[in-house]
Every structure is written in structure tokens, then in C-alpha cells.
Image (cartoon, rainbow, N blue to C red; front, side, top):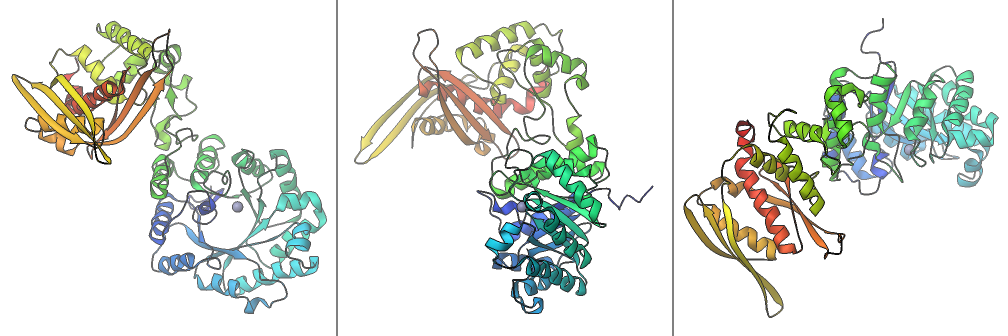
Length: 530
Ligand SMILES: [Zn+2]
């Protein structure tokens, strides 16, 4: 058997180059270096760092990268073939590729005659010379050369013989990998397979694939090419990239590993996949896509009574793989389809020791169903749900009770000022506080904290991180109701809480009180369970 170090399929990551073409994605040089280090630690085989000929930031990246050692991955600089009618030694863009100092250089060249004639405005022969000269030049400088055949599939559909000539020009000049690119991402898997087979029949070296997701087939197309002998896959983490994105490596890698049983990454790497995906979103400052296959927060969510019952009995019956193997977790959604099993699984997820036989379960279920009917939703409000379960299981009094409140708004010149008054009972003590704020919720929050801080210093660390309001459709002729969702954190944990009422201030207060109460009891949630 071949050594573990020789992969069956090579993963070529272009998140730092093609991925940064995506809307809303920008990385500083420091970001790019951190991402490159994470990719290396994860175990991808190539990291394409950027195009030194296109911007100074990428030149800076390669300069800094020279001072780092990458343990597993080989760094690649990306660029194009030499310009037409210029000697390759005199082409500045090619010179910058060599100066990047990477072991690998990837260049793209034209396959499609239409582009040769109308975009480059040169002859078919000169295009072949541009490809061959550039590859040969890079090889003479000791580089490992990846040749990216732009529009390989569209070009081939247009003129098979010429397309092949361009790929052969690269291979004969010494290219180590010839990568067929579906640049516009519009091909179908059957076309990808057929054209890759054609290339395989006429080329002898390693073949690669570079696909885009314009019609939702980025991953499928990359996989289709494997059957024709491709062993090098290019793509980006989380599918970042121009338009609808590149082939998503965050899907390709686990598919290869778990479904196709092709050797590419280790089990240990796979178990870090979710973390890597999250790290990238955080660095890019993008909200993670919950519906991303494999690594999304919803990828292993279960909703609906019977279904959850089955998951609880035989985990394998409703999951294609154990989520822990890619570092993801199972998540049970509470919905108005809720049955006993949902509540039990959710309660266990929240740390309560309950079973289907716990006597309080019936009461809990009835309460949740009633609240859901009123418009409460607990899917993003784990904090409120945990409190509800806790209240049903224990008979401890709450850490505080809001006896009364009053909120008023007045205008002073051009500014509106909100003032909140709260009366709170803590144990035997009663507190009465007034506070001002930017809005009613802010004023209430300040007044509540002012009343409670003497008793509970830990509330100093609690911050409200998000506040969402939704008007719920009016039901059975009553007035529209408002649902407020508050997200909070204390530097250690994050939780969501919910409130519903005809009045937005009342709904906000409910969510606010739950947020502070949860902060106070959350560490006792497990010990409190019976
Ligand atoms: Zn691309």
C-alpha cells in the first residue's frame, strides 16, 4: 500500500485567490497568512496565495510567506501565460511569478479559439507558443507547474482538435498538472465526464479539475471528472468565489473521504472541518450559512416528533454520517410538531437528565405547545427553553421577579429620551430604579441591571448582542402580535431568549428578563435537573 503521504486525490485550495473574487470577501495580508497557516495545518496539498501580477497586496503576501514554513502544503503563485508577441524572459507578470518565490506556479492559458481570436486578438499558433514558452520558462527555474486550461469545456465543445493542442502544448513543455477549468460553471456532469475522458485519452500526466457553481453543479462536476481519472481538485472553502462561487471544498473533501473512500485527508483533519469552515467565515466577517452541507449549523438538525423519536432510538436511521466525524453536532429543533422525544433530546442537549419516563414531561410539552400557539419560537431561543424546562423540573424560586415597570418617551429639542422605572424583588428585598436609554429596551435593560447588580455581580459581563423584532400574523381575528428575540453573551457562552406580546415593550421585557435570568442560572442548569 502506498504511503499515507501520497494522496490518491490532491486538494488544491484557491480560497485566497479565486475565493476573494466573491462578493463581500476581502482579506488583509495578515488574514491571508493566518488562513494559509490554518489550511496547512488542516492538510490541503496546495495553497494558492494570490496573483502577484494583479495587485501589490499579493506581492506583500508572498514576501511575508517566504519567512514562514509550511509543513504539508505547497504554496502556489497564480498568473497567466506571457503576453502575445513578447519574449517570456521580458514579461513582467511572469517575472513577478518567479519572484514570489513559491515552489509551485500556476498559470492559466486559453483553450477556446473564440477567446484567442477575439479577446487576445492573436493567432492560434501564437497562443500555443505563449503556453509552451511560459511553462518551459517556469520549469527551467525549477518550478512545479500547474497549467489551468481556461474555458476548457466550452473551448472543447467549440473545437476539439484545437482545445487538445493547447493542453498538449502545456504538457509537452513540462507542465506537472493540466487542469481543465469550467470557468463559467455552466457545464453538466455528463459533459464534464466525456470531455475529461477525451483529455485523459490524449494526455499522459496528472489531470486536474477546476469548477464553478453557477448552475449549482460545482461539486457534482468535480466529482464527475474523477471517473475519467482526475486526481487533482481545485476549489475554495465554503465555496467562496465569484458570482455563485467555486467548487466547495468543504463538501468535496468529506465526500471523497467518507463516501468515495478516496485517500486525500486524514480522519483527524476531517474532524476539524467544521472548525475550519467557521474560522474562515469569522475571518471574512461573514455570517455562517446554516444550510451549508456537512458543516452548516442545520446540517444535522432534526425537527418533527416521529423523526426525532427514530433518531433517538437508532441514530443511524436519519443521519448519513455521525456529525462528530466532521466536527459538527446534532441539533434538535423544537417546533409545533413537537413530541415527547423532541423535548427529551432537547433537554438532554441542554444538560438536563431527563428520559421519556420523566413525570414532568407531559406538563412541559403542554406548556411548550401552548406557547408556540401564541407565537413563541424556541429554535433560536435556547435560553428561554432551558428556563422553561428548568421551571418544570425544579421548584426553586426565580432569582428575581419584576413586580412593576413603566416606560416613557419624551422629546427634548431634537432628541427623544426614553426613561424606564422598574420595581424588582430579590429574595426578601425590593429594589426600585430609574434609568434612561436610547430606546425603551435599552432603558429597561439599564434599569433592571441597576436594580440587580448589587446582588448579582456576574451580570456585569452580560451583553446583549442582537435584538430582532418580528410581527407575527394575526391569528383568529386578534391584533398582530410582536415576537422579540434577544441574543446575549458573557464572553463564555451565548444564548437566545424570546418574548411575545401585543405590545413590543412587553415582549422585549420578557426576552430581557429571560436573558438575565438565564445568565444567573445557566451554570446550575445541569445540577438542578432531577
Ligand atoms: Zn475560477
